[in-house]
Amino acid sequence: MDQAQLMKGVLEGCVLAVIARGETYGYEILGVLESAGFADLGEGTLYPVLTRLDKAKLIVCRKAKSPLGPVRKYYSITEEGTAQLADFRARYNAMTQSVNRIITEGENGHDEL
Amino acid sequence: MMNYETMKTQLTGDYRAVFDRAQTYLMTSQFSAQYGDDKMMELYDLLLTAQTEQKPAEQVAGKDHAAFVQNFFSDYQTGWQERLHGLTEALKRLSAVVLVILLAEFFTREHSETDFFAHRTDVSMLLAGLLGGLVFIAVNQFVLRPASLKAKKIRNTGWSFIVIGVFVALIVLELIFLRDMKLDVPTAPLVFAFGAYLLGYYIVRSVWRLKKTGTVRDIHKEQTNDSYYKELRDRDIDRVLMTGMLKHYQRLARKGKITEDAFLAKMEREEKLTVYINRFASVLMAAVVLYWIVRVALESTVAATLIFAVICGVLEWLIWKLFVGSSIKVSESRRHIYTECRKSGMTLPVYLESQIGGS
Image (tube, rainbow over the protein chains, first blue to last red):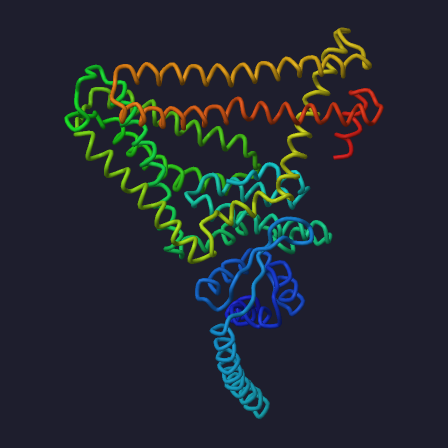
């Protein structure tokens, strides 16, 4: 499994985490995710995620003029979104701990051989 | 629907290529107008921001533009609300068209003594149109859209011609194969059914808007009609007009029919004539409609005359808006160009060149 596939699995949670920092918009979210190491987001995968989160009422969308002039969609997190993010963090931490344990044990076992 | 052509003029190179690809995809899709506008507006903001910040288009739209566009619009399939909205919108348009046809057919009937409740209408062509529409949707979905995505070169005008060509071909086929078909049904129940649907649609839409946005006004339309988009549209109209004027001058100058100094005065003279023609067209259209209403009034009841007057009024207004109204708007833009040219102190060809070069 390549890194891009692994990261896509947690994309929704990460997008939620970026929006939880404060009201933001698509281009800005894309920049934050890319600088954090999410590759291939330029393929348009972010936008369906935003729509899914909006439909699930985890985020709300407000339309307002951007400094450049066009109407822009600004996203902010809802109470349900905050709860979902907390749940994601807990599940993600539990999962990484389990994965770390297996990988570390594997490495140790491998070292011993 | 928004004017994507105007928005496109603000984008260059790869940013524009992505927008073009999305526009073609939208053209060959059956998305609701609001969904399409919403997505194109979002894409426009994304690309314009990237272009302004000099971020490569590849970073926001990837290398494979077709894949990007498919992903970008992929949320539509999951939204049952959009599909329901699209269906109700399509039914609204269908109801309006059917109502106009039924009423027009009733008012222009051969035996004017036939009662509205006893009148029957041949709906075979309406059904054929519906069937043709479904075939058109299928061809678009399964043939044109995949083909437009695979196409290496994007030319929206070319795709528009293909889509329109398929549509016209289907209409011609319908007329050939279904010319002998006849299906008479009572007019009144159909008029009431479609009328009730339209009334219901507007009531539900108003309540829904009030609940969602606190007003029955179309917020979406207002947002896409704000000063920024209006200025874009005006700039685009000016650019198209100025390019046309300059070409016109170059043609005349090549033939030695005009001098640089005399071009502005000639154009202003022609504009005065256009203003008179527009006024004359408006008065003529009103007079023709009035004549028809008076004729119907002399032969029919008050209720029938009123219905006829409303239908004629709406059709007249639509036709006026499409032809005379747009001509008046363009004429205003041209006069604005001449005024600005006079203020600049330049000759019109020099002024046009300076403006087109700078846009």
